Length: 267
Length: 341
Ligand SMILES: Cc1cc2nc3c(=O)[nH]c(=O)nc-3n(C[C@H](O)[C@H](O)[C@H](O)COP(=O)(O)OP(=O)(O)OC[C@H]3O[C@@H](n4cnc5c(N)ncnc54)[C@H](O)[C@@H]3O)c2cc1C
Image (cartoon, rainbow over all chains, first blue to last red):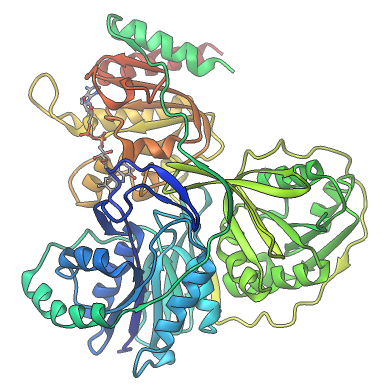
């Protein structure tokens, strides 16, 4: 049975229930009170992590790494919960997690950190990540990481990965119109930008948490500070949100239905 | 002024998508010279269909290998076309193929890339693009001095190009290294009668978790809900979206609406579909859901709760009503109409 080294790239994003407000400073745009906002593991990267943990469990001898570029104090907070969900070894880079940073610079940091993992065996390497972040939302970082590592077998918007006895990778990627493309790749190394996958979020397991934490704290202490550039922003603003909502309370279902049908028919 | 490359690929059936034609219009609107690069199994017919588009050259990478959607071969083809065109600004439509391949191409060309771009214009002699950050919650305009600059445009940035077809002479471009260890095996599609995601539909119909909740009689009516929703999709040809709460229920193996998957989910961690109109039913209209409606212009909702999120400036009209009763009547009316015509 094949064994893998699965490296998951994932950063943190503001909790989606928070109100965000952009501010612009000399170093480009950022979020107001960015370091105060509660953060979560970037959701699609989270799915990648849970898929990685599941794959490793089913292929004994495999190992999961989480490579994360984020401000280390915030990352530590997020690791308190994420560390309880799946066994992994953290590789931390103390850098901005802002969506406004240059993706290519983030990719360079991640690829550098992956290449420096002691004992990395590229013939067993699967690089996982979310297909898009919830911050920049560009869907470009994983491909650039792959290019820097010299991996041209790449998959985006992955919902399923099945490993054959011989190490063959069968991949389901989302394509247009709610369908999936099925591809078969002759084994590692390969890059996977995950969509939602098929697994529910694992429950917190304090035992896993304790085990992870022993290595997470030193990894955070070791995290090297790194900087990233920003594109030339001309403006950054909140959209005009409010609509004048007409609240219709006193129509019968039949009257509502007629209004809706008429509205659907309008051009 | 940058030289522009419009980078397109054909679909499985050899034609150019609507978004591809929109990108042609966008390039035309920027002014100046542009080159078209085409990738596909056989691109002559597609090239002929845009003979009158005004491109100064038409470059092509073709062959069976390039008819398939796959990172290694798409990136190699796009890289070869970009190098042959020598363009500073590369415009491409947002498609699964280009979304997967072009970020790597930007790296190979030592250039930059912006994806999910929703507008492009010339300002003070330089291209400027608009795109969203933080899942459609913050809007930004930006420009870049580094070249080449790949801009991947979402649909709706410009009207689809229309014009004369003709016979064009393509310049064939060699691809240096398209080696791959990946084989495309095929496409897994929902059965035609379960095809609920319809990107070209005029209406997005969103079902929320309320469809599975206990109703006035103290009981849930999930079977009825399923029939009403599928019935409406059949009668209206709408595309089906869902809230996260509802697809999560389906994923947890509960006996709920079996035709829903995570691909139907709209919002922060779901999709941001584009349709002229949207109708939300039994969905509360919370912010993480509604950010997925950024590109839905005309919005209505049916909810029992007059204080739901939709009523607070997120929809144009909210009907405070029972969606079970309303949708049953809507289906009856639509059915009678289609029987009459
Ligand atoms: C990290 C994160 C990411 C998220 N991402 C997303 C996302 O991508 N997409 C998303 O949708 N959500 C997302 N959410 C969840 C979001 O915050 C809400 O919990 C979710 O959208 C609620 O779904 P709902 O409106 O369907 O369900 P509910 O909140 O349960 O609302 C049900 C509604 O149905 C109405 N109702 C019940 N019966 C009837 C009836 N007979 N007729 C009319 N109305 C009726 C009720 O009045 C109620 O308003 C996310 C949350 C987090 C924390």
